[in-house]
Image (cartoon, rainbow, N blue to C red; front, side, top):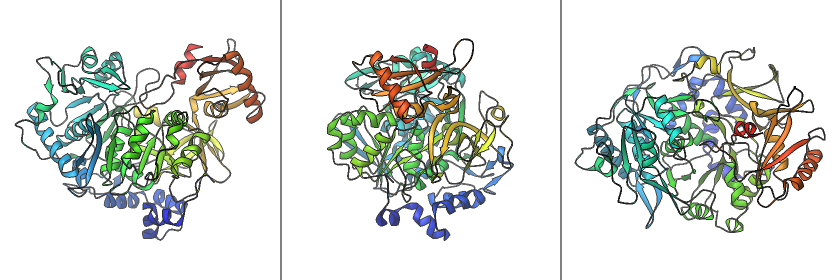
Length: 591
């Protein structure tokens, strides 16, 4: 096994306390208990997190599995629960032009309350939708929590989107006000943000001026003005099912789904952070992300509800500078996406940094490469906790824990309070297939604003003795009971009469010398028959005619000689969603 926890790690782990309190002998026993006793499990996690209610719930849950109501009757504002750490403890550490800075829990609470007062003076309050399109920064955290504080709904938009993509999302949710910034500095380049949001049709903007010279339209508001002459205000208390955040599915093709989060969604994020990422009070947590991806709100809640510190870097995440920030800030829990790790491996100086403070690494976004994660565990001495989930889950459905041994790029357990089943062509499988979730769970969506929720997640699921909810990932269950991600079910291809996932091809081809990154797609030929395998590769200065036989030899040796590489196409970079997932549909359309 690549990760073998020692006695010190096991004794200090959050999950060990839970096992002891419940008199359970193993993680498997705890998972089984959590799905057999879901109400008791979620009640215990709400108590451990110290969630503050203005009106206590009448029950933990009510209703059928497909449409469960969580915490019925509860009234709260989840932002209140984000400030329960000691007033002088550090809530956020971040980079500035002058170096590094930090903000205590008391200071962050004051900033949020004051910002909330400014928002109310600007006419923003209960039920209003306000978009956030900006980099992940201390201002974005303040703005996010202040919007929740006044009872508004955050509309999450990735800062990397073009104006047309921003415009389409604003139109989908009928949102007119956007919190943004003048520009984003990234890798020595200045990328306009405010002008892009104006081009996207925003009727009103609240603008963080990072350069100190931004001219605003008459209807727009300077961020700093929210904090001038406005009193700190108390939070707006709302029913638990009230929307706090509207997020969008990846949108790799067609119109993205609009997925609401409510006040209970934060409980799922923080629970996963407590049990799977093993976040402790006082830990420093870094995850390069933004509010346009679910991991942005997840980071805010998973860190602050667990009384930890959020670490924010302005460096490009693939760079040595970002890694230097992580080590200088003494980050304890580090989140990554697989593409970052591959980039770090190409920079020899990364391995020479002092990674000793890192206690847990966690990876999500796509199936990871074994050698990359094995390398990362080698330089940090920490486990890489794989974490697979989705926006409509509020967190993960499959992960690992720090107390279990495991091999790189594998998962050990479904997330607690949630179960899964595998089906191959509609028949339940014990070894490999499409994953279906077994509801209910806090965090699972119960509505979509622009689609039929029942049709998307429940219609046409396989027959089973338990309720099933569609998710769409492909998993392989290994002989030891652990799991390996095989990509999305719609990225499965038929090569020579054999079904295989893109992830399986890519694991082998990524090891070919000269290949920095690759994506495999299956293209149906004219007239029907097995798919043609086309491999897109980022391979600087390589000759595709020479790469093809090398890839073919690797596939023949490690996978199946029936899998023929029909074509290799070189590209400068992979097309990705805001959550860093490779857009294989886009690549398929190029063939």
